[in-house]
Length: 360
Ligand SMILES: [Zn+2]
Image (cartoon, rainbow, N blue to C red; front, side, top):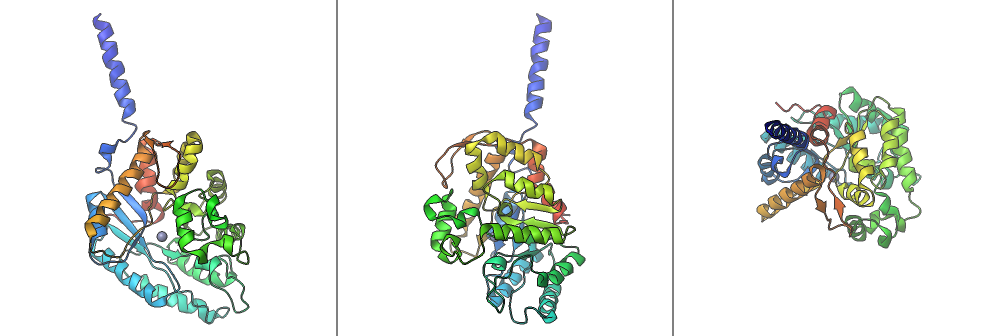
């Protein structure tokens, strides 16, 4: 009888030992996490303070919306934040894609001169390039300038020589090339309804989805030693198998999940094991991120609470097997409950490694 009790006791210990392979909701605050894709455009530090409260580090990325003055403003906000929160905030400058002088050597020299200055700021860890390459900027003949254009090579070489990776949002979700009512998630259909200029279904004269992916792939094939962080699941958010093919082909490519976790959840609703297996197989190549932006607010607490909720909700998806819903599509899905070591890589170690973050 006594022996039976001992066995039960040992079995209980073993089971609780197994359970500790996984985080719970209670671990959210104690585990170091990195949101590797945000946009800080304010000096009021609300975003940074919420990050402190929730044990997050932040990587804020500047974007070339086609407004050179605005890029200077973004640079100032990012540099100020990294200066005030050393070891907590890091950033990626960008460059203004002015097509004046395109095709002549002076073009790349102008870009690299500016980058050289911007890289001197504290906390610079990457250079960001954006979807204007491939979707907006055109050469003098009207042809779209794509990511694999040889004229961009001197800029790529310059960034590589400085030991920095490139963080690239190139292309768009595949939904962008579909009519609004066929898009899989409402975050896309809402965005493209508001931004018809980016809704490629309406612009058949623009490069196709496949053209965008091909240009990015060509860029990586040309620069196999370039460390490249593909934003938004590398614009292959719609199908993890398609993404896996690129991650296999390009050992120096990793992806952030920013603004595309709903696409992983959408695919989880169709088949959880496939997505869970993908996250485990590619655990060294995935970086957590939200794409949350903050430009100041007269109600900063509302932003802070919303940020906290987003981070909590994502933690639930990756660490538990709770049944969940999304406001972006209608099906229920079950959390992935990834092992601790996988969660640690996705939530911090991969960003530390690929962005070479100095967190001490
Ligand atoms: Zn972004």
